[in-house]
Amino acid sequence: MRINNQRISDLAWDDEARVELEQALGGASREMLDEAYCYVSKDGSLRAGPHHEVRDGMMVVNRDAVYGCASRMRESAERATEGAWGEGRPYEETHLRRSDRVKALQHLGRHMKDMEKVAMYAGE
Image (cartoon, rainbow, N blue to C red):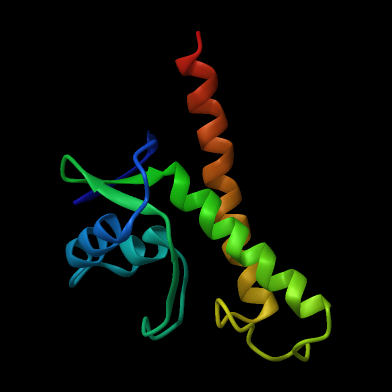
């Protein structure tokens, strides 16, 4: 399976898409895992924010999943700033520390920029 970040899916993101992605990633390379999820722990045991789906033998970006993941990350950050958790502790929803959440949001931001470009070209 190969990665195609220029192909954007507008299909609804649901449990079926998530299960299909997880099955396709069985035995996948670290590169594939790092792209499929916005965060993967060093040992690969913790994965957060799946935002790709499998289409035509490729891993493509799912628009709904990208925005949903970014929204959950931001909600987690807002709760953290309300003093619910200490700065060095993992956040409840994503189990990510602040520095990891920042990297995850940067990853999602790259996809959002790609989605804007694709939308611009589709409109011409």
